[in-house]
Every structure is written in C-alpha cells, then in structure tokens.
Image (cartoon, rainbow, N blue to C red; front, side):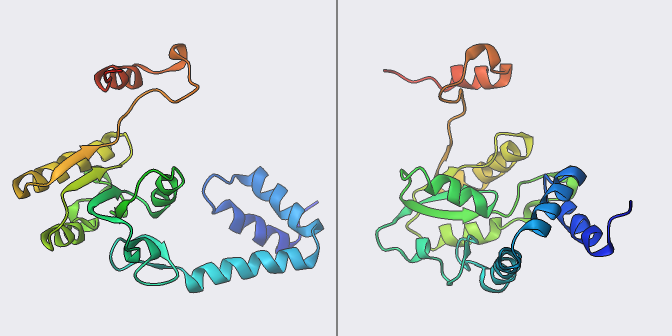
Length: 198
C-alpha cells in the first residue's frame, strides 16, 4: 500500500536532515502521526521560531537571539583569549565544560581546497580585525583534528606569528574511559607527543 501524499511529504523532508535515513524518517513521521496534534504544533512552532529569532553574533559569529551575544558582552570574560572554532555548535560544546572563560570566534568551516573552501570563504578576516584592535594575547585553535582542521591551524599560525600572538592547539589524545587496544595509531601517536609531567 502506498503512503498518503502528506505522509510522503513529511518523510521526504525528514530525510533531508543530517543523519536521518528513510527508515528513521518514516519512524519519526509515524510517531508524529500518532502523537497528539499539540505536540506536532509545538514542534512546528519551535522550528519557525528558531528560524525567525536566531541570528549570528556580529562579533564572534556564534548563534544568539541578541547581537552582540551574551558571551561577547559578558564583562567577566577574559578578552585576551579567543578560542577559534569551526562551527557555532562547537561553542556550546566548549561552554559545557565550564572551564573556558575567554571569548570565541567561529570560522564557519575549515580550509578545504578540494571543496573550494579557501580563506575568503571563512571568517578569518574578521578574526584578524579583532586581533588588530588589540588586547588579544592568545588564540586557542579548537578546530577538528582532521586534515582540514590542521590546515586551518597552520594557516592561522602563519598569520598570527608575525603579529606576536601566542597560538595554541587543543591537546589530542585518548578519551577518558577509553582503552588503548581500541585507539587508532594517529590518536596514540598524538597522545605520546602531547604527554606531560606528573
């Protein structure tokens, strides 16, 4: 039996979401079909609201409802530190630790010449402007530990070293609770290189 057009339309839209395949989309669609109408209305309203109210901070490019964002306007934040990340969601990951108290800068991606992403497509010029305003002493590179993230860090290092800005990289290594036998060679080698005194 063919699915009704409205159900097909919902499944098709859900399939467009990252990580959602046909079976998961169909399962979600049937869940929404069985759920009370108010639940579907709340979901639809939440989606519309996020599209209408969420903007990018003019200073750091993080997501916010007010510009500049609460992090950029917080007087308690250390303005001499800028943590550079690839994606706005990375800011939330670092904030959840409760450890970092500096500012952020979202690049909106990483260098990837094969995909046509060069420095011009990223918010590197905006980062340079923030550095040139003065007061920044260290940039923490929190890009992903892959080829694109590493290329981005090397490019930033080339730009920042002549300006006398300290550039640091997040440590790489074994996850807490992990086991050595399951770690790949690159992770193990980075763990050995990043060892520290006890």
